[in-house]
Amino acid sequence: MRVPEKWRRPEVLLLVMAGAVPLSFATWMALLNNFAVERAAFTGWEMGVLQSLREVPGFLAFAVVFVILIMREQTLAFWSLLLLGLGTALTGVFPSVIGLYVTTVVMSIGYHYYETVQTSLALQWIPRQRAPELLGKIIAVGSFTSLAAYAIIFLGLKLAGLDYAWVYAAGGGVTVVLALIAWFAFPKFPPVVAQRKHLVLRKRYWLFYGLTFLSGARRQIFIVFAGFLMVEKFGYSAAAVTLLYLVNCGANIWLAPKIGRLIARWGERRALTFEYAGLVVLFTAYAFVENATVAAALYVIDHLFFAMAIAIKTYFQKIADPADIASTAGVSFTINHIAAVILPAVMGVVWLVSPPTVFLSGAAFAAASLLLSRLVPSNPEPGNETQLNLRALALGRP
Image 1 (cartoon, rainbow, N blue to C red):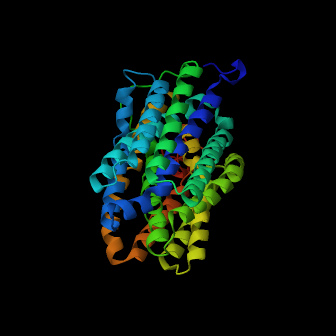
Image 2: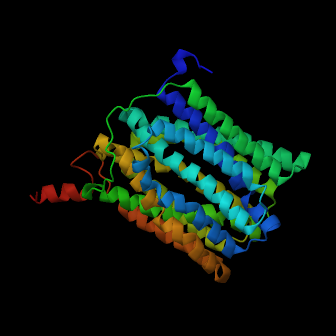
Image 3: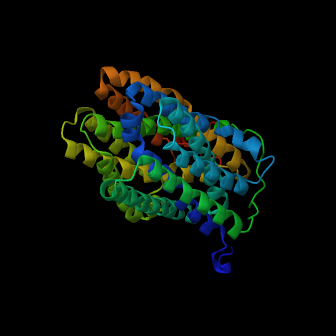
């Protein structure tokens, strides 16, 4: 299969692949809490373990730099999409604790390795001045296909009474089909700059590493326990949770490109400051919410802040040596998942004792991110990676 020549561009391929991912991942996420509780008798402990296992491939994302010694990044992206789709399609077939653990790991390998390579390819292929807006469009495309997935899930569960296994198979199967179309319909695009194929850790990237680490810790609390709160405390059904995701996706389709343009206009420092200040308030509110409608509103607002994370990527793009992008994308995913591997299991135990403490921990991570965001310079570039560089120059230090 071939696509028209005018569409055979890296930007279009990125958008096609971005659309394939949520069809599996959105299906997996939308059904997970209900499927785990109803079919596999999960408690908060098993859910914490499962989410920790899900993040292990993300922790090992640094190994991408070794995989690209034997295959192109673009090819690795296609293989990753295939694994993501396969793992999702098989999830409903194994409704047990061990079965859910195994299919989650397969799905997660595909998801995390794809996300690592997608970040690398996007930062290599997209010019800096267009990066925030196009990254916003990638989020919007993902939200659109998520919206389609959630709508089908909602109708399938509510109206057609489909079993979980059929819904999982449909979501994963469509991802596999789109991955094969992307593989055979687009040419192999050469890298703009030859990438270093060894691990790269640079002292001057320390602020990027710090923001990435805290982002991973904070996001895990939201992903794992905000949805679990809806099911366990407020009794949301699978259809109701899916409807909530529909609202999130609809808002992101409209807002994500605008957020990208806003980041381009505001700059990374101001955008990140706004995001983290808002998240401190939101996580604190989660800890004490007692109304199901208010909790749903917090969930939607919280989800909208995800698009602001574009600013971390564009900040790195501005300060990075272009040849470091592939290696650092893998390293940054590993850093992002250091806390993510441990935190869900630990917080799963805390949840059994005090659910509000889990969300107050998220507020603390957001506050730490807020402090670090103030060190991002107004005009980041190589040699001007942090505000501390500017202060050192002002004091006449090298």
